[in-house]
Figure 1 (cartoon, rainbow, N blue to C red):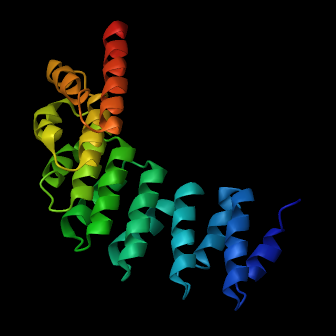
Figure 2: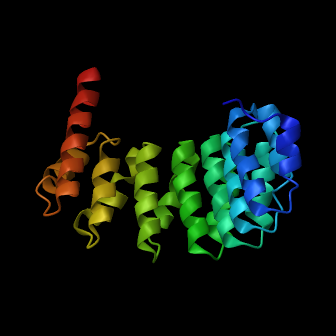
Length: 226
């Protein structure tokens, strides 16, 4: 089945029927970024939050130079926290190091936990060491999911200096926090990481113990490569 032409998609995006607009946006996956982004822009201010969310996500996938400023503007100005969180997530997909500043600002200044969570995850995806201080601060968040995101992201950016900060979660009540810790330590080769992982291998929750075993193997491989 061939993808609809750009003209058909463009017309469908202006349809009064939401389903037509959603199908048209979905059809852009077959279209090059250069052709897709001008069409995505048509629905960035759509009345349907679901469609806007899809459009923001699409900007993270269909990458052109225009996507970065568009996503930063949405992250900083959109009145809907869900859309701001989508923009933060899409910036992580872009992997553009310039986004560290905008995501850090969102983490400090946005009042909604979902936006801060998305910003923390994306800071990990971008893998830029400048995010370290913010992520260490995020460990003190009252929201457990933000603690989880920060632990994972510190592992992603391979922040060896943060090992002491995250080890305090080895006995966290939430097993998902302990699992994120076990996964993150697999990217942080230090003697303390190995000791903590041996402890986490005996965890009462199977997923935590399995993650610790996998991470220990990874650290052994890293050591053997040196």
